[in-house]
Length: 170
Ligand code: ADP
Image (cartoon, rainbow, N blue to C red; front, side, top):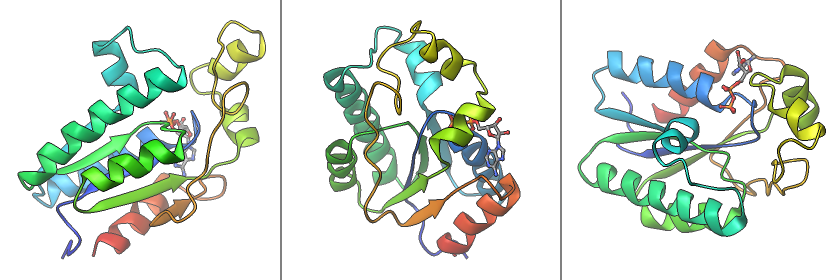
């Protein structure tokens, strides 16, 4: 069971694509299977480090810090679930190279669906120009070219998404 652990399970995708929702459920499942696990979430980390901005340089520093922490935990056999938009391919590649078992989960829910959901009202604010550097609108998103797992949540439930990841880990 869970042959592929410990690992750094790295979720990437647009805001509102479903990263945090799937990761929280996955973390709960793995906890109940007694896996040593931590979840690092973009919104939570940004609350603790409020001066983290959204330019490429700032996003890169943020992702490198989180990748470094994830790699340290992984070295001590903790599985780390990471949920960051992490839009830049080269930065994700760098984090991959820092970890021993990096599993990239691309939550590929399309922009239109994310905007339709607009869970946090960010798409509306970005459309109105209240937020700039918004990924998918006036900031780039570079999709992974060879993610271990790709999940589009448009037509599947959270439970199904979690089952796809658990099947991969087993
Ligand atoms: P992100 O962390 O990528 O910004 P969130 O997880 O915060 O995204 O928001 C995703 C939203 O989409 C939530 O409101 C969630 O309930 C909804 N949703 C609908 N279907 C799914 C699904 N299959 N998987 C994940 N989220 C889903």
